[in-house]
Image 1 (cartoon, rainbow, N blue to C red):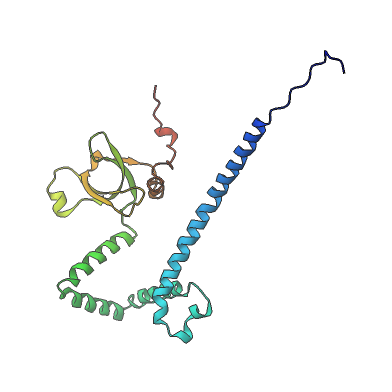
Image 2: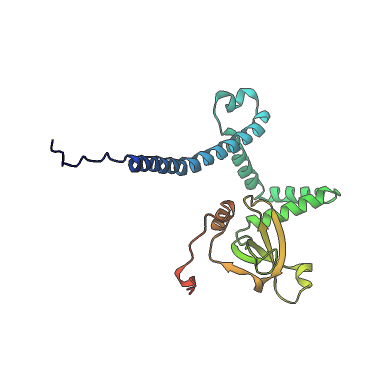
Amino acid sequence: MNAATPVPEPEDKQPLHISVMGRLRAYFFAGVLITAPMSITFYIAWEFISWIDGWVSPVIPPNFNPRNWGVPGFGLLTVVVGLTMVGALTANFAGRLLMKLSERLMSYMPVINSIYGTVKQVLETMLANKADSFREVALVEYPRKGCWTLCFIAGASAGQIQAGFETEMANVFVPTTPNPTSGFLLVVPRSELKVLPMTVEEGFKMLISMGIITPEAPEENLIIRQ
């Protein structure tokens, strides 16, 4: 070999090492994003079905209990069928008469009448086809001026609440993050709410994700900032 011939430098393996580790890390997080939502969904569904089965199974005689045969979900099916049959029975004259007698009996019970009346009114409002409750997502200044938080419009204020104000008031629910089942009930002027074009489902996704998942704004609502 000629002494003037340059000796080639050894290749650096570090970029290849970083590339492989980065690719494996990307594959890992992709696997988490794919499997975690499905796993959590099936886990919650299974726990709910097991809870219903555990509640209904003691009522069914052991010889007729499909849970003893290794058939899950029979309790949930029993509840669905039972509620459907109750609704069908109360649709006729005899069922309506029986319901009126039951409600009149509960009205004479000092504590039970308040609980029953409140629960019935809430369920009727939530399940009614024409209910406007929790169909709009908005922003409200809370807990101070200049600080906005996500809220759900429960409906227009009425009765004694609205009678104390000259402007139109609204009942809004401000949920906590990331647990939207708890929160605060606020009565604010309707004009001070910024109604958003997002759906209720998108609003809950944003709350549960602590603001990580934010719906895209429509093009006509985009504000050009300098």
